[in-house]
Length: 106
Image (tube, rainbow, N blue to C red; front, side, top):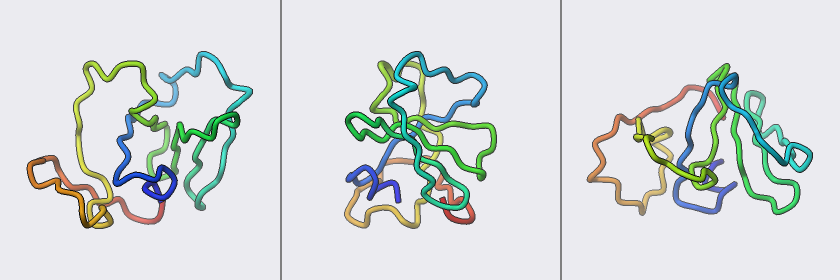
């Protein structure tokens, strides 16, 4: 679903505790879409950019697309999620991150 929503080989998400996350502006432009029984995706109602992902699989967390952060300083990749459904033509052989297979559907 993420590849289709973003039109990319993969999407880099940054997770945060919901209570530590603050949207400083643009709340009135935010649109939400329930993409499955467990998941909600939020996007900009003005330009359509995918911004946030929340799921019952990770209660109390919000995931933000890395590309929309002003800085990635201090962020270190933790895992490749949904490894079994990765784009088959992508070369990730040099990455030694854990491969995570969440259960259920996002």
